[in-house]
Image (tube, rainbow, N blue to C red; front, top):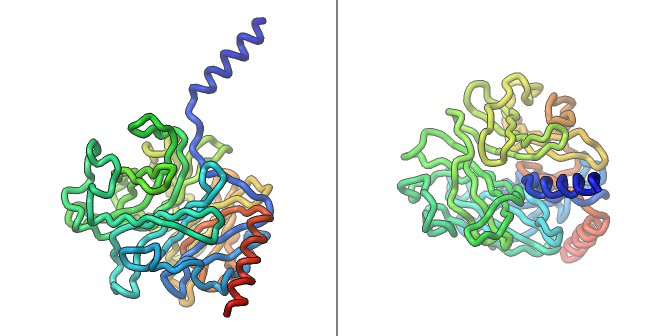
Amino acid sequence: MIKKQLFTTLLACAALLPVQAQNLQKGDYGYLYCHMSDRGEYTAYAISRDGYHYQDINNGNAIFDPQEHARIEGGTRDAYITRSTDGKGYLMVTTDMCVAKSHIWDNYGIDLLKSKDLIHWTSVTFDFRKGMQNFCDAATATSPYKDWSTINRVWAPQIFWDPNYIWADGTKGGYLIYYSMLNRPEEKYDRMYYSYADKSFTRLTTPRLLFDWGYATIDCDINYLESDGLYHMLIKKEGGHPGIYTATSKYLTHDWGEPVEHDFVSFEGKKKCEGSSAFQLIGDSTWRVAYIQYSDKPKHYRICKADKNLRNFSDPVDIQGVTGPQHGSFMRLTKKEYNRLLKWDRQLKAKK
């Protein structure tokens, strides 16, 4: 009887503890590399069985018309893809930006996309120049800027499911969308911000500052590691010694300590790297970290190893089989999903 009461008490206590935030991981057959193409500002796919050697879908051309979804500038950069938390669909975020048109490295918003089959996508676009009218909590939230019309950058958004977020109506769970912003009249450098999107993936909360280390930071990639119970962030820092570094926190939206200065992607020498994306191989507790080495001509998209704590980077190699690899993300695939994309690829090629 005492053991039964103790067990019941432990279960009750466990129910009160916050569930760790994490994107749904599913699939033991292969990998999808969803990325911006270096041949143009559009989103492309490539699939792989081993995580290193890939096959382009649609010959590395666009998987959808970027102008259909990027309603500000017509270009979808920095694609990040993940599963919806119910496992019944897929979500993507992109930087709405087209340097080929504007000829400047500024932009004004992001695109949120969703799909049921990885092939057909619907979307909403948030033009941050419109200010607080973008955000579903505008009536109660504090704006980070006095003037949104002078926004200069909204870069490289990513998604992280947070089951502990509580909406105003009491609904639990939201998708943390994190990205860097710059508003030159009001801040000196790019800083990381975050919003929450609801389960419909159509509403967004007012941006809040994630951290400020006193220098520019972009291209954040967050994962929760069971190995140490911490959230780990890969990020490109441009202050001090530039490069791709890691930082950790016990909490998703605050208390991010500064990057570990001695532990970073150092083996590329003076070559400039960004756009990191971490993923685990199927059945492997260690990590792979992909990134673009953009100062090379031609550029190199690299995949290196890291240990189970997402530390000690080593053994970089070029990704294989991808036409125009650039900033993107990786998602594990089931056999059904893998074969669906292969079938779609054959259909696309048959039409040409």
